Image 1 (tube, rainbow, N blue to C red):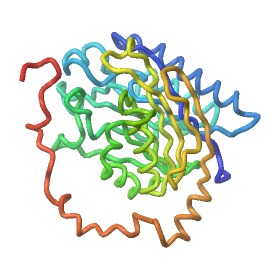
Image 2 (image 1 turned 60 degrees about the vertical axis):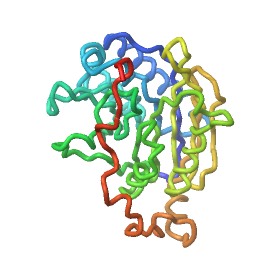
Image 3 (image 1 turned 90 degrees about the horizontal axis):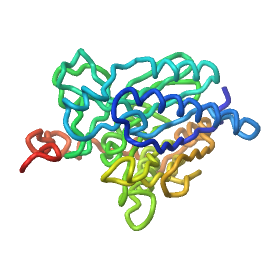
Length: 317
């Protein structure tokens, strides 16, 4: 295909579901959003990649693993992912799903993942499980903490619309995480996020915009970032500022939704051929090529200590 297509950052505004039966309504609405975006923009743009936020199926936090497993956890794939597969086959598009609270029998009853799938016309192409839970609120498991975990932690998929990677919300505050995805070959990195106030899309604490731009520039990659747009009523104790956005490989904002809650879709061009030409010809500001790995000794020693992750919110200290 041509090296130019359009991506859509699709912002949702669902209230938090009380049980897994509520997932179906959310999946149905997101499938509608996919079709509305593709057909609505068809006279203008060829929308091929659609990215949804974290929490858009189920929230990964509050209050403990047992209740989340009982009420909200699902195995993947399932009947919901089958709907996305049908949509992708029908429209020839690629969907980076919102997150599911995933239970996997291979890892036992105490393990829950916060997971997103890349789905295309070919079916499910990759599964990403959040590496950096937002402590101390999020009680799900990181693949890092499972000694027997032998699946790709940072999958990158080579597709007709480019090499696609993804990371979830808090992962983006760790430059090492996004850098690893870039070193795995990603040209477009999706951010599936539920970034709350006050660290949202409005000054003076607009971390959302800051880190999306920084990660794009430092990795010479496009970023398609979909943020949650739910209200405080839907997800207490936080409100969700939206501001979903698409950023180019130099950190330029190509399109961004207005800050504030509510459903929104923004689209912008992804010029894969131009990106590849830039990566091939540049000698300056190509940080992956200039990185002197061995001088950064902090990565040679473990830093994270599970004993320091704190207690689940609500427990006594």
